[in-house]
Image (cartoon, rainbow, N blue to C red; front, side, top):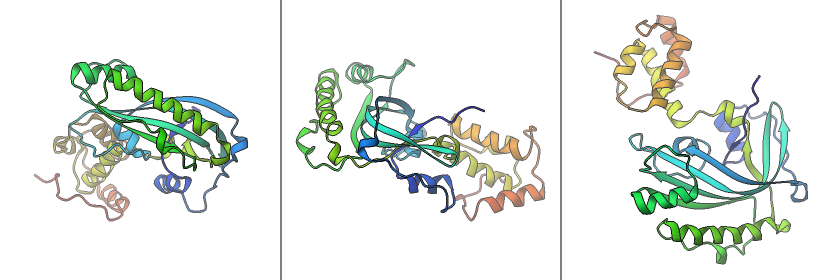
Length: 269
């Protein structure tokens, strides 16, 4: 059995449990104290904007017509805690979140590449600094001055982040561990696109539409949405794209919607 991956989050344990649909009595991990944080790491994650939003990071409005990526880097001091079937990473972290759009080419994104593409190729980027697990009040004077994200400002930004890192990681008195990552997300929380495809698919089945008809009426050019729609149909209706849901399958889909509804029906005609 493959081990679930650790995914960064920007939510509390209670919020992660609620998003994952766990019962209120689910095992709750105990956050470690500052002197128990015996692991140090440089963090580097590249996520789609929709995946980042699904785990609580503030990436702004999502537009399916625009391909956006979220690049997150920083440093963390942490300890893993196991509760039930899942692992929770607690600690203190300084994270820089850079959301990029209009990137040309398929090369792996790094901050220097983003800075160069913004300056030379017209890409767009916005950035935020996120601090988790630190309650000190002396950081205001260390925050970077933010301007357009080009090659020169990138160097200034990195210098400011380094100063913040020194202050936060060296001040154990003001560290108060928060949830930084967990394996629960990997197995329980869908991305927004997956959720859209699944809800749309339940409506289509409840309306008695075939998969072929549902895909034809989808009207959204998003591969993740359409793949989620196909996966739902094939798990419930079978491999035939033109199979019509039977009455029981329609009732089951309607029951699972729990009152959620689309603003109009796409599945007639």
